[in-house]
Amino acid sequence: MNTGNSKNVFVIVLVAIVSSIVTLLGYNVINKNNGNNAFSGLSGDSISEEVRAYANSFEQDKNVVLANLTTSEGYPDFTEAAAKSVDGVVHVKTTTISQQQYINPFDFFFGFGDRTPSQPREQVGYGSGVIISKDGYIITNNHVVANAREVSVTLNDNREFKAKVVGTDSQSDVALLKIDGDDFPYLTFGNSDALKVGEWVLAVGNPFNLTSTVTAGIVSAKNRGNVMGGELGIQSFIQIDAAVNPGNSGGALVNTRGELVGINTLIYSRTGDFAGYAFAVPISIAGKIAADLKEYGTVQRALLGIQAPNIENIRRQDPDKARELSLIKGVVVEDFSDRSAAKAAGVQKGDVITAINNVPIRNFAELQSQLNRYRPGDKVSVTVDRNGNSRSFNVELTNDAGSTEITHPTNALSALGATFKELSDERKKSLGISSGIEVESIKNNGLFRKEGINKGFIIMRINNTPVNSESDVANIVTATNNSQDKVLLVAGFYPNGRTQYIAIDLTNNR
Image 1 (tube, rainbow, N blue to C red):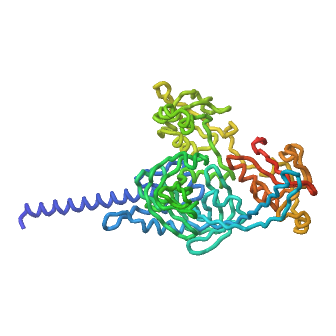
Image 2 (cartoon, rainbow, N blue to C red):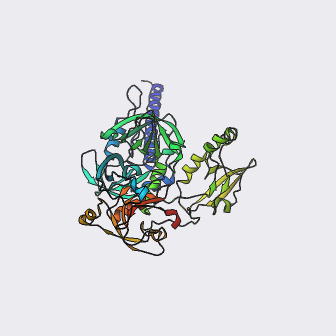
Image 3 (tube, one colour):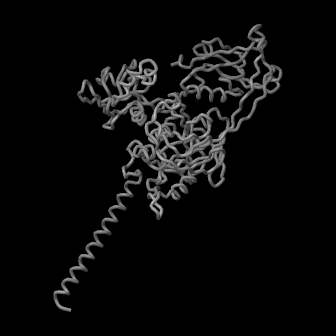
């Protein structure tokens, strides 16, 4: 071999060695970056600091994620994500007591008391839930556990546990449960903001009481509003076309990395079964609700204190104006609440909100989606369009009372101003009732006194739910306080008196 050939071989070998070193260094850098960015979404974007904080509230392991997989044919491979998800999704069983009510029509004409015994009936309901921490915190839907006297969950390995309801929120339809233990499989929070329309997702739950069911579909839309006619407080759902049926409520919406990106909540159907579209609460919202319920016992809602035009209502009366409003990219400030953080910061009527902390806002659903991430006292930058000019204001968000203080839960019964005494079976039999509790004492400043309920009143039902203990009353009051219609309908009587139906507006105590 001559000298020239030897030099060429040497150069080739040297280039190969350098290339190998560069490749190995690049591989290590990528691995390091992946390790530091464990909550990355499908597009590689890390989750927001807010969602990271919610995940930290439940001490989630930041490295429990999967790589996106594809089959040899190039199709998405859901097997690993499905296998991880089914272990973190539980079957939720609830027990409630209902009562057939027999109303005597003569009671309305002649004032006779109707205390015909009615048979309490035990009802069993089913749904799904998602374990989000090693020590057994579980997210589910509020409507799955509402008014339940007993909640139990069954894991994918058939272990069954009694569950405690930590807190509920009817406005977002999210509830937080807790089971005892310290080594449960769980799902880590993913990046619901990074989801793209057309992206593959999995719905995991227990439809029709069939456990560990996985269905696949795509994201059909994001920030979907006016679901259920706007009855729920949240109007920024993820819309999917994965098959979701009764029993899927409270289950997991996961991406192909096996990360939790939403809580399946609603279906669009005229029959009650899946008809092509389902809706999930984004984890950017559900995670914050769960973290609030764990830390504070109640949800911390941050408000700008603005009023925006309801385009759906306007469309019924003035289609042309509704069409004009729908073309505006942003949220028009129509008016302000009595105590408005936005007004105090300099926002004016007619301004169009176009961004929150530099995140573009195109409609009210997107505005709500951003505000749902914050708590009273948090400061945000609000960008508005005022007569064609862009302006920004620093707004300190407030609670619904107009202050920046954190809201703490109060005793559900304190507003009623009453104490209660349980009735023995013999007393119920002598009164001709199958459910009831007696008002033992009354405070002068309570709602009961205000509405004319006094000591000795026998309460049979509240909001058509039988009551037999003080905890029954407290659960109903709590659920009603968390609903949009904050009214109690109390059915009861004084001994030897007729049945009375008394409405109590809980908002009167605010």
